[in-house]
Image 1 (cartoon, rainbow, N blue to C red):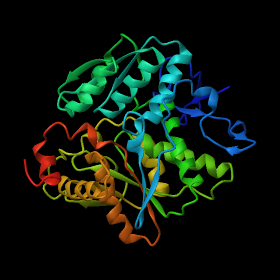
Image 2: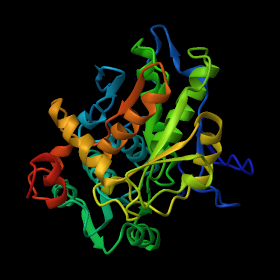
Image 3: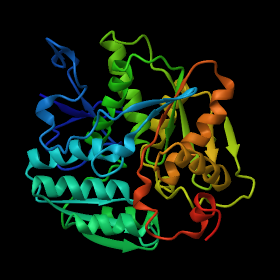
Image 4: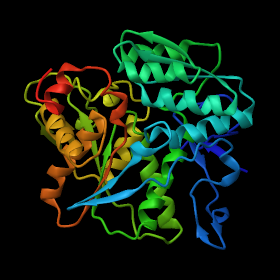
Length: 359
């Protein structure tokens, strides 16, 4: 009924088979969904077919809060505190349908937490590889959900180690097509809100939200609910930007030349879907915004003053949105992707400088 499809060579693969890349050309796959089956008597309630969503914790349908020129999408209010819950719900649903007993993920924190939580919900074992310097609150949550945590030196090493592990099925969000499917309903929720906007700023590391939003709006266009895919402006962290080779670049506080220490959720350099992101960004993105720690720090201080407990990577997107708004006359959607409550209990000298004025 549903097929995984390689958009490069056209190969079709069963979604219940092991793997997320094309057997022929190794291209990361996408799920081919029949749009005719999405409409109900009440209209389109989800871009995710109900029969594919076997595991849920009530993710999605997050609030959209107006703040001046911005529409803040509070993705940090998902069950485990990040937008990654949307993707994990579909990924673990696939694992459950396929009968996989153990899943393997690599993550800087949020995707690992989501995978661990939804695996626990489904009764599936999870093994998560993460960098040892990830926020300790995130690592503790992964373990609390019962997953086996393996820490290595860097984020990229975590990715390589997970790929080499043969003790389970690799479901890494950096390639998993069902993970992207879980992101599509953000687009539908924005349309159902009835609020007009001119652009969406989108955090990009592995690119799951960017690709999910694009695919979601593309399907909504085919269904006649919108006229076109809106402007999507990717946001990356200093030292980890990859889209700069494809798009005009705007840099905010990157003149120090170093890598961002605050935006831990965006520090990925191995991006298997990079050219897929770039191909779509060239169609709907006027530029990419690359954000450094000074801009992130000022933005997170401002967001907390609004009563919004977000993580630093969410603040990077808000910092970018403030720049983007200067170029536009309409409103800008800002997905606030991760919950800052995973950070505050553990002292962080750099973050404390902005939140509390010092260590």
